[in-house]
Image (cartoon, rainbow, N blue to C red):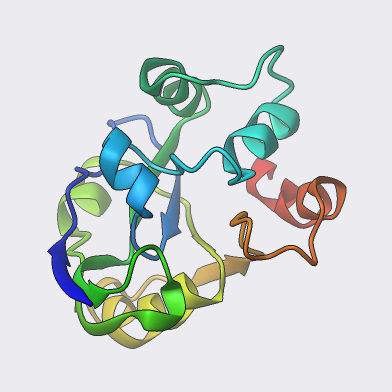
Length: 161
């Protein structure tokens, strides 16, 4: 178990209308220095499907362009924590992220949490600061094997409203 400070800056701009929060970046995401970097994570396939994109983004530049095109901000609930590998269940000693800059810059209409761990952290540590309700969506992580891509797409289509 090691104490890690989140290495990826928040992704947003002044046109971002939704904020999607994971819990903490996986080892692969930390290596790529962008969100949902594990090749088995369904996040990018799901975004491409929901937004009718012709191709699933592969590079960080393609992923960032997809988020920007659809006015999506992305970050995580946790700023720093003790974690073993990429395991959400191992997370301890949480320091939450500070969302004031994003929320004062971008016209965020809704915050969505990607999975139960992000939702739990957001509710416990971040909601007192933001006073903004989140909507918890099923995790796109490969660890959430009970949800296939079709089922995820059905649940996640709420981000399109």
